[in-house]
Length: 464
Length: 103
Image (cartoon, rainbow over all chains, first blue to last red; front, side, top):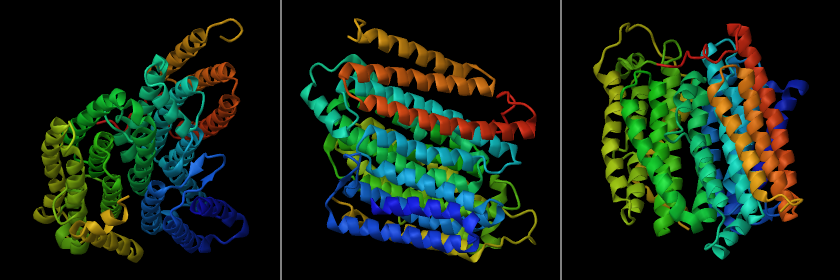
């Protein structure tokens, strides 16, 4: 909770920086603030008593603290990576404030206990992102991305709210624990509109994590937004949305799981097929990463399916979101530097292995991690999902996931082949990476390898 | 029962309003009308929440309506800002023109 307050305070400080003229000092202040929020978060983890705030609307338990830890680590890496994105723009402080407020929403989503805070968390996270997606004012693609994100986001919010209203109408409360006990007490005669409400909420959340068939906005928005904002959307926003789904469906609605598990299983299957086949056909790397994020969303939804059946620990999904977030940070960081003077087409990567071997190596590790090849963290992330799924009745889903992952290897390898086996058109041009950026990229690559070789360091912490 | 009218009619009315809004978002081409349709969806939810709130004799539903109104206002503010930016670049707000990102 104190971490949430610190980030909110940072957002307000960022807005004051323009008036009191300490723009230059803002970047270190934000970094220190995030470290402080993480430290406070860690202390709350150690005391391990979850205190509820605001009439039991928010309460940080172990799952919430673990997810906000992942979010804060990603945010820290992202801020260093995005250093020059902030320097380029004229409205530096506004961008800082918007990202920080989006972060507040994301942390809120990890710890909500009430439908109100769920709704507010989603909106606090989304509204700054609409602005950030459209933040390149003169670029029509960026405008379009922001507009599409806004329309699709508020459309999904409408579904979410209608679902919440129906659930409220049946149970008479927005409190998650009251709804949960309502389900267990009245499991025989739940009104039909209660079921409709749950399905609408599920659809809205699948919109937010961009799972097929509600994914159509994601590739356009990811492609049109500035690359670093895309990195933010595909890491922090995804992790937060999964924390939200986890609490809502694995805990609150677990009493009516036979209703939504079938729908969720078909959404997962469709996402796997659509995302991987379409990604294989893309020539734009950013768009390819957007489709790949849809298939990763499907993998994380699979853990929720598995956990409802077998009640395994949530460490698998936390490990997955950590591995995926850090891998994406590397991938988007390299993409940002490669595409700075060129376009985001796969041919921009030609000959990178010779021009900048370190960057090419980091990209290789990131691609292998996203594809799930051993010694990178992506392998164990996928392994834990499969291990969770194998004991349940979803063997067909498991087979489908393995087959579509094989297609995944194809399109990730396309980038690696372009880097090492194709020669660039012009050799003389150099790719200069800022020191802070290359530090983040290399550090994240090392983390990817370390938690890929010894996954137990992460799993042991989060097994509860 | 609220004032002698069964709750089902309230649910029916707000569902109809919600569906009209949802169809409008998908079918209309003018961005301003799309925003209006999103508002219609949210107001259908508000109507439903208020009627359930009266049914249960519980004020939280009505408090939630205030949250929705505040958030909807924020969303429209951002939306209109983005629209005016699009108009400056393209001199139109027709969504058919916004297709630079299709393949």
